[in-house]
Length: 270
Ligand code: HEC
Image (cartoon, rainbow, N blue to C red; front, side, top):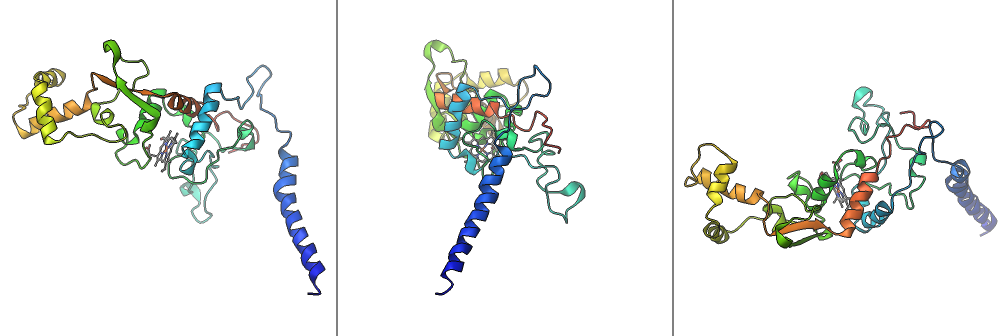
């Protein structure tokens, strides 16, 4: 134990150097970063999030979106040296996830930054430029309504299924066939008995199908029966609707404002 002093000084130096490299130097380098204005009079980039979107950040964190989604666009040059040329991995820009790589300035207003750790799903740094509000709501309500293969969980608990009041749908109601809305979060299929009961209570169903799909088919054949069921499942429920809760509304406002990696920045060359 005559090396006590060496061990203590060594440990101190180890911690001091990592503090210097990981805390002090980045802090000195980045502390004065300002929003970027291309020419005087332009709106500075990045913009502050709206009130609604800020509330959406909380919903995004609370529901663990960042365990499956990153918010960092990789440079077009990212990849392994042996792949070379056009075949480099991580070509986020070619996938349409942004126009350039993301840099520290893109995250200037983010508290906390939600960079994410893994990419089970696509990168969301610039997802606001890709989809409409209606698409975002339907996808959150049930991702399988777009992609049967999607492994993203349904966030149906952020939506409310309620009776339609006075025959008038809410403007915000999702436009979805009953197969998705009867049992939110799942894809519903009636049992044989349920289907018989539905057919008995809906005598006009076959006529409605024929009106919507002019052509020759017979609802008495197995193929015609399958089409009738398909028609029933893909039309909207008349007496019920699915509307977003405030949380869903805030979350979608946030997703729509995610537009990093779009405005050019001088320090993001590729
Ligand atoms: C278990 C992993 C997982 C979680 C958790 C998850 N997602 Fe996803 N997400 C995916 C996968 C996989 C896809 C691709 C398939 C699809 O479009 O459904 C995806 C796709 C998306 C897309 C479409 C992106 C594009 O460019 O097509 C959006 C938007 C999205 N997720 C938002 C969210 C939000 C918001 C949350 C949190 C409420 C969330 N995701 C939670 C796995 C996940």
